[in-house]
Image 1 (cartoon, each protein chain N blue to C red):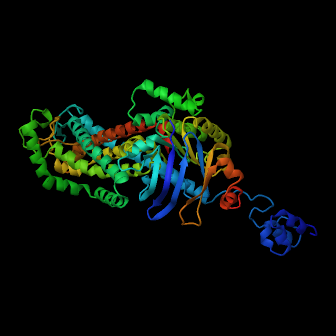
Image 2 (image 1 turned 30 degrees about the vertical axis):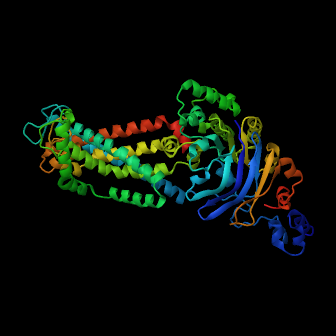
Image 3 (image 1 turned 90 degrees about the horizontal axis):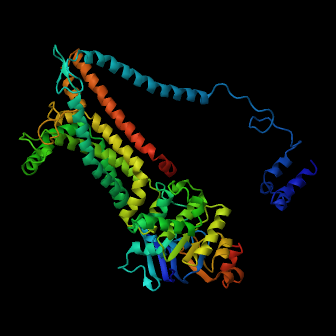
Length: 258
Length: 363
């Protein structure tokens, strides 16, 4: 249920603009890896390269090698939709489908996979909502619109929707940046539980959050605007936050830069 | 005055710079302190700095504008009421003079000494031709709209969208002429072919002549409502939040599955509104149908034989030679058309309203 991600010399482009350059790192299964760095340093771009969401934008492309348990996900013969089913994604802003009920939102991915049987869908929805710590709050109103929930609940609904299809990896792109501290805490607790089952990669601007939730931390940075983002340092979270080996990392985490 | 500058020096973050003479760095408090005289004396400069609050103005642009909008809103109601009263007042005498049943009689001879006219065949033709036109136009329009919004390269999409909008600007009389003189030929051949091979289906039966039929009228009508539905649907589809589209894609949806999961449900109320606008145009379309239909009075589902008529086309054809009763009869038919349109609109509202819980949060 959890897989190793290996990136080798990954570069990503938006048309002619190179957003990240030669990123090489390995994400171990069943860990939480945090990507930190100043705005525009390409951490979200790298995250979106992992499940091939980067190429959704017109003119965007990725170079280099990205494997999940030694399977090249950019191989010509690989079905893009299969990659995205294996690697789920939670976005910065909660984005439940506005026209769907809470239940329909959770099972949307299963329906896309062709699951039709009501009993299977109901079981999967309950399991996903329980995993997302949302079941008790919504079990009596599964037929109500998902967009009627609070921001924090919506984000947990989106997490439930992502894990309902039982992916191997869950990517989170600043999942708490639109949430209040209490909802943020709920999602951080959730990450702790989820890493028993999934490999989690999270982009965050909040360094305390990175320090709290992650096992490994990757620090990205850019020289100046217009330059591609590079991986500066990648190590155990404790090492990065207590005794980083690169000066730039230290400057960033102590707030002297970025 | 003596200790005030000192206090302001501690107030801002730039205390030291104040002391060296850069008064702006410490913020406004430093400037107040340097004003000669007691800085706490309120200065009545009319900017709300101090003193008594100014009185509310009893008349101004605010009130004038409110009055203007109220008048505009009332005018709509007055105009609608005036039209309704006029229509009813003219229609009632003609309906009284009718010697046949207005709802069921198949024919339209209101100008004779014994006026005979019935709305049934006309209403039937109106609904049939409009429904057929929508049946043809809606799938095509939605296909075009989706292609323009989600498949075509952006530049091509914009150019094609502009062309579609241009199609909406063609006057209906031009469509009518084109349908009557040009489009009729392929339709006639196609009708004959349908009749030969599918004549056993009643709607394609009959012995001819073919051409000036419900099929020709509906096809021309379909082309006319196509740009309205396409244009509006495209706008609605383009408004789908990117976040929802990405959510679907990230779940492993293909392009078409993403459209089905995120775009179509989101656009549904807008598409319904677009279709209703198209239907409104189809129901009321006058001259194009007056030129392409066979103008007969009779209820028939046959689509390819010469024939067919609608309320609006009948008004256009018969108004010139109508006497008082004739005009009253035509106005009565106009009232019926108005009612049909109203029912269609209310139905659409109900459909949209029933999903409001979901669509409002989508907005």
